[in-house]
Every structure is written in structure tokens, then in C-alpha cells.
Length: 604
Image (tube, rainbow, N blue to C red; front, side, top):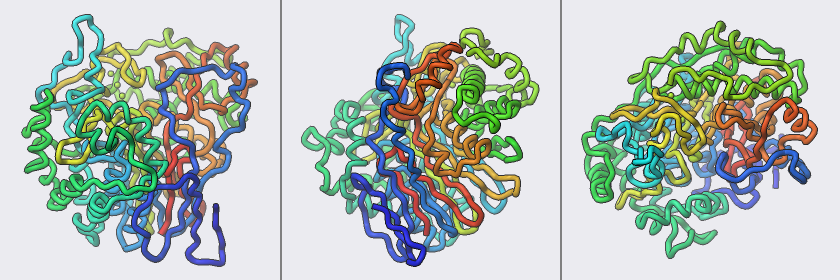
């Protein structure tokens, strides 16, 4: 059902098919909201595949033809979870700024969207506040006891412990990162305690179990059932909670109450002691010293231009910004806007740019505190021109023909959200525990899931990780090192100097290509943000040498022409979750992710 009326205020536009997550009713004024009526999520790069030539591959229409958007002049919040969106919207409505809303939203996600929202993981944020752009790194780190070959088996193959169980856990950074965001950019109108209050109430009182929550448990159940504490919390009696019942997490509420006093409530004291005890009991590596040593870091963002637009994104140890810039610089040499959108000709140049950018990414990027990277070279016009010279107009380049360069890296479970406040200040934030419910390990007495980010290192350089990425020595494990990421929180300003798009995504290495396609859809083809988010997505990451396409997203005639050029295709249910915010004149447009059940955009 959708209710829209210019003559009523507030307008409420609800598209809650299958029910978005419940929670406390929103205070007046009611938000303008738009929620995604998506099917249950499908993990990208995780299942068997078919080619677009298979019978029936595109027999059904594109399922996301109708964008799910809401408009407002006083700010916008868009997330993968309805409860968290409303928490952020309430902060904006009560006078908080974008940073305030981002902090409250992130903690709400840790409660209501535990498959990816977290206090046991990490992430990145790109901000544009008071006219200044900044990049915040709160990526997890390898414990001090970690070693380069800790996941190398006797036969030279990677051990499964890199992605399952207690040894796969990196030192969490989320709490430190959110504290730093609040301390540095918060409005001062909202205290830290006030920003945690909604999440504490949500954990203590619970929220209504709906299809969106159950869909995450469907994908996470096999991981969670291996661990007794996790199974007791999320699979009581051996099965997910019943739809319509209330899911409570009082142990997490207690942990959040400790964090109310500051980040030491997580990195020291009873919560830290419980986490470290579990590490000792189950053979993990994180110590009290690791936790106490952790620091979030402000870094210089990656900034580049594309057809008169300024794009700001995350620098290493995220590969997102650098890889976006490499793709953009290659493609700026072609007049994409004069080609038909998603025609064989246009897609060919996009796939080849992606192929070359990922080859460089996988070989040369890592933690800047440990690895010297040739960023000036990779971000230069000279490099882009050299890449274009190797692209033939009528033939795919086999990935084996591309030199990967001297050695480096990058789950699907990440979540991205974007916030714009009434002043136009902006936060683009991506947070993760890597896979669905991370390591599967829930801290006993803590109620929160721990990440499995150690798999994002090149645990065996030259061997594919959980996302099929073949990475090099620059992303090898080292004590205290931050693993390379694909997260790409991004802010675009138009030729007028005003914010035009706030974007980012979830989905491992598909994040970068999804964000790129959104930006190109807007800049090259003039799509509004709703259409840009809803359009079919494609992914090419150098190795394996194949293009991933979304089911029903590639016309057979287009596939046939591209296959004749040498491309191999594989189908997935969907690629990435990437809700976004766009600007149209004086209005903000929040585009929920139609691929994600429960995604919601709301304006104060």
C-alpha cells in the first residue's frame, strides 16, 4: 500500500509488503517513509550459477522496475532496516545533526539487524560536515598474536578457521569509531548517552520478529547453530523465533549501558573480560591488551573528479575509493552517455575498466600503516591512459593477459546507511562483521556477534578468499594490521558544489561495482537516484574471469553479443545492497534498496 498526498502533512508513504521490522511508534511529526518490498536476500557470489543463454534466464521481467523512494527537504536517512532508519530520523527531527543520527542509527542496527549491524565488527565513514570532507577508519585489526601463516595448512591450502569460529575474529573497531564520530562531529546538542538510549531500549524491550529478520536467520542459521551461545539466542529450541513474537536481547542492553559511559565500557571492564575469556576458552587470539590498544583513525579521503563532479570516498585500508577512482579515470576517456544504457558497447567498456581496476586493487593495496602503495601512479591520468590503450573495442581481454603487478586485497555481511541533515551535512557509513552473522560466535553474557574479518586478509597470498578474490602479499596477515576492505562509503558533489549523491553498499567486492554503477547511472545517463539504485547490476573483479549478472537483469540479445566478444557470464540472485540518497533541486530523495527486505528511507 502507498499513501501519498501533497495536501496532507505529514505524508506517510508505506510499502511494507511482508512487514518491515517493528518497534516503538515514531513520535510526531510522523516521518515520510518508503520501504522496500523486496524478496528474501540472496548472498552474492555464493551459489551455483547459470549463463544468460539458459532457457528462461530472462523470461520474467526485471523485479525492481519500480524505485522505492521518498522525498523531503529537511534531511534523509536510508538504511537496510526499518527500525534503525526511524531511530536516525527521530534524532534529526529532534535537532540532531547527521553525525548524531549516524551514531544512533549504527547502534540501533547492532540490535535490530545483528547479521551485519554490530559492536563486534568495524567499518568506515566518509563525512561532509561544515564544508569539510573527512574519512574515518574503524576497521578491525589482527590480534598481536596473529601470524602470517596462521591459516596455512600443511598441504599449503587455507584453513577454514579463517572464516569460521573464534580464530577468524579481528579486534573490533565499531565502538571506537562511533565514539570518534560523536566526539569530533556531533552537534553537542545530543549526548552520547542520549544517542545510545534508543538501542538500549530496543535491546531491553525487544522488537517484533518479521520476515526481514527471519530472512537473515535463514542465511545465518548453519553458522549460528555451531555455537551454543549463538544458537540459544538466535535459534531458541533449535529454530528461529516465531514471526510476530518479540525478540529481546537483555545481555546486549547491559553491554550498551556500559558503553554509555564511553568506549572503555567495551574495550575494558566486564565486557572486555567476557570477550577475552571466551577467546581463551575456545582458542582465540584477542587479548585485553589488543582491545585496550585499539584506535579509530581519521585518514585523508580519496578525492577525484568525473565529468565535472567531485567524488569523495574511503582511502586504504579500504580499497573502495581507489578502485572507484581507477574505474572512473579509465571510463572518462569514453563518451558513455552517448551509448545506449546497458548496451553491449557500454557494458564492454565498463567490464574492461572493472577488470583492470580490480587487478591493480588485488595486487597493490593494503593497510597504509604497513604497506607502501603506488597510489599516485594508480590515480594518475597516465595510468588510466595506459589501461585504455589495452582495451580493444570488440574483444574482451582475458584476465590472464593482465599483469597483476607486485603483490595485495578484500563478506556478504555488511550494511550501509546514509544520512543528510537539514543543513546538508552528510555521513556515509558502512559497517560489517563480514559474513552473515560474522564468525557465528556470540560473546557469552554479551549478546553480540563477533566478526570473521581475518578472512579479508590474503591468508594464503595467491589463493581465493571467501569472495573469490585472489590477493597478494600487500594484504598478508601481520599483528596489528588492518585487513583490506571493499567498503566504499561515498559522497558526490555536483558542478554547483552541492551534495548530489550519498552512496555505499554491502556485498563484499560487489560493493565497489554497485556504487560505481549508481554514480554512472546518475552522471552519465541522467537517472534519478531511485532508478539508479533499481537498475540491473553487473560485477567483474579480474579473477575469476567472469561477469556476474543479476537474475533477469541481462537481455539474451545483449548476452549473445558480449559472449561473442569473449565474455563468460554467471547469474546471481542479486548483487550488493546499496541504498542511497540523491538531491533534486531543494529536495532530498531517499532510495531504499529494493533488493533488501526491510530497507527503509525516511525524512523528518
